[in-house]
Amino acid sequence: MLTIQQLLQEHFASFRRRHRLSRDMTWAAVCLRDCRTAAMGSHRIYCPHGHQSRLGYNSCRHRCCPQCSKVPRELWLDGWRSRLLNCPHFHVVFTTPHELLPLWRYNRRQFADALFAAASGALMTLLGDEKYLGARPGLLAALHTWSQSLAAHVHLHVLVTAGGYAQNGGKSHWRQAKKSCLLPRKVLMIVFRGRLRAELLAAFQRGELTVPPDTSEARLRGLLNRLGRTTWNVKILERYEHGVGVATYLARYLKGGPISNRRLLKFEREGVCFRCRARREVEAATSTTRLMTADFLWRLLQHVPPRGLRVVRGYGLYAGGQRALLNAARQLLGQVALPAEPPEPPTWQMICEREGGRGWGRCQTCGATLLVFHFPSSGRPPPVASSTNKQPPC
Image (cartoon, rainbow, N blue to C red; front, side, top):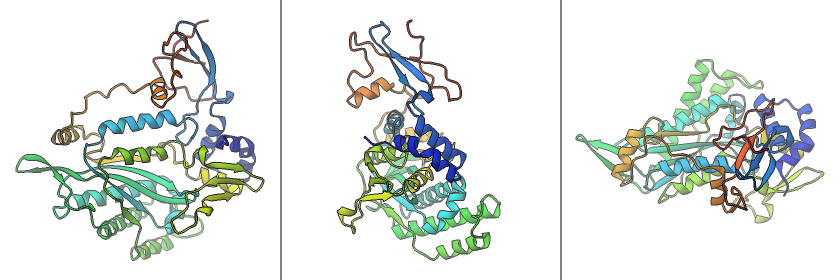
């Protein structure tokens, strides 16, 4: 199988000399290039009874790495499967105009904060209105910045409960969504558009945004004013009977980067050929894309989020610190309350076996759970602490 790691090992050194990269881009590329190689350090997987022992190289654990994202993705998904309310959910997509892409490139963290605030604020305001729902819903929002061709395409996916927690006369009840489409799309678009413009203009006023070098703040303000008179792309997709399906869709994009190794077709002298989902109005024969190697690497690395940026955020009933309110809503829907202490997450052995890798995490001789010992490695982040990190037998 062709991999992004192969491409980086062959071309990243020359690409880095010709392009100015941020620290986050450089760190991501180095992690993806060195993942599960000797440069990352090693560990030993062994049977506690001494039946088998093998040496392995450490994973980079970068969230954009398609090679070592399986376990983090499953852990994230397991956590949200247990938290989601047992009710129908809507999938809402908020897309920002492409005219704002230069502003996003120079202000990724501030732009993301403004986008999350505008989308969640629009949904919470409208759904809190008695005209539409009059209750407190649960929102799970995830930031995506790419299209199928890896071009910049900043948008937000939001999982919204088709109902909400409400109180009337001191009594709590679960209020179902009044409309089959959740909200009027045009109304949601107008409120979202106004909120995002207001967030960005306020950030300009506070001096928090960097103006791209080929424009000026006055031109950007004028652009925001002109965009306030255009139609923005806001989609309210069909209702799902449960939110797990949409959460599973989001998990595929939150861990592992913007493109998986399965989509790579071949590395050519002219560049990289990869599979790209064809649009409805385009013939299926055009479902592959070819990019020069430098263009492919640039498109790939431009989607590395700033370190520490939260690309998934919960609001309303799904917000952090709302356990009591979420448990009250779960009780109304006939679900058991969340435990005070989160359960122990599954181990990598359990995840491997669950995904069909039988015997991967167990000794083939005695069936005991294999243990892992990480050798100290300088210059690299330490491995995740684990109860199985014990001294192997000599």
